[in-house]
Each structure stands twice: as C-alpha cells, then as structure tokens.
Image: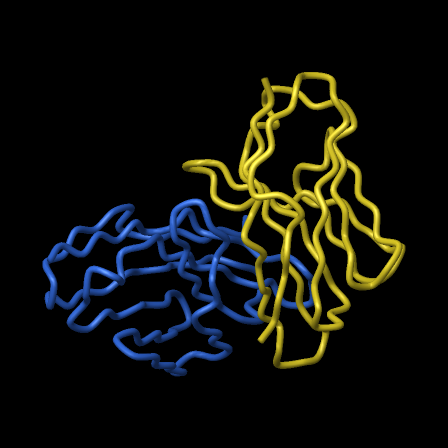
Length: 114
Length: 110
C-alpha cells in the first residue's frame, strides 16, 4: 500500500511566523504535490515537484515555497504566515509510470493562523 | 477553460436507497478521471481511475462509469458508513495538472 505521511495533523501559528509542513512518501514516487483545500473551492495546487530539487509553481504559489532535497520528502514553507493561509494542506504523490497516474494523498494538516 | 463540476453538492439517502453522483468535465484533453472518498478532517482516499469512455470499475457498493463528457459514481444499497464527501478529479493530457471538483457530500441515514 502507498503510504503518504504528513508531519502534523493540526498546527496553530501566529501571523508572521515561518511555518514548515513536511510530507514523506514510501513508494519511491517521482512526483509530489502540495494542495490546499478550502470549503467551496476544492483542492488548489500550490506547488508540484517532478523530481529531486525540481519544482514548478501551481495555481496559487504566492506566499509559499517548497523544498525537495530527497526523493521521499517534500516540504512546504510559509515564509511569513498570514490569516488567509488558514486552511487544510494536503500532500500527494504519484509515480510517472504510464497507466498509473493516480495521486495518493496524506492525511492532511489543518493549519490555523492567528 | 478546464473545468470539473460535481452534482449534487449534497445528497441525503436512506439506508438501502441507491443513487448516483455526477462529475461533468470540460477539459482540453483527458488523461484520466479519478474518484476519491474524503472523510471529515482527513485526506482523500483513492477509489477508482478511469481512462476511456465506456470504462467501468466496481468496488463493493460503488461503481464508476465514464463517458466523453461525464462520470457517474453509482452507489447501490448504501449504508451509513458510506457517508463522506466524494471527490472527482481529471488529469489534463500531457501535463501534471489535476482539476478537482468541489465534491458531493453524501449522508446515508440508518
């Protein structure tokens, strides 16, 4: 079974703090994703990494950065947290093998910025 | 513009009352369509992948079908434990992009 884990289930941070969210997958997947999920808006892509040290901006990258130093680990960084970044953050991974494009998700991190 | 729309937004069923959830899509090219189940406060759990029109997949009380414009998730004789939000996503051909619908919240009453 694919296993995607996220470092925290719940986080409470203050405005202006630097926040690190970490995601680890154990299936040797090449691609990893960070999404945020907000009521009525669905999942929106923040950043995508197609391989180690490789990244692409998604639809809403402003205020976020990412790091992928090892294949299994993908970190999302909020440089200076703001209240509008309160959300559910979901990490996903997938292989690049044709016919196996399914994304597998972690349990999510619910972030509250005060 | 690539778009995925799910309907209805919410659905209440009595236990045993079969129904269908709809996912309609308008995309430049379809690589695959994915169904997920999401329980409150948790990450989406993968259910099915469909790649071409006419394809069907089944798992327990769930059956997913795909046409050129939409997908249906049929729920036969649902039970209260089937209560969840069901998400549909489409992967755009030639890209890594997945477009998600906003989900259908299903409540099955005992």
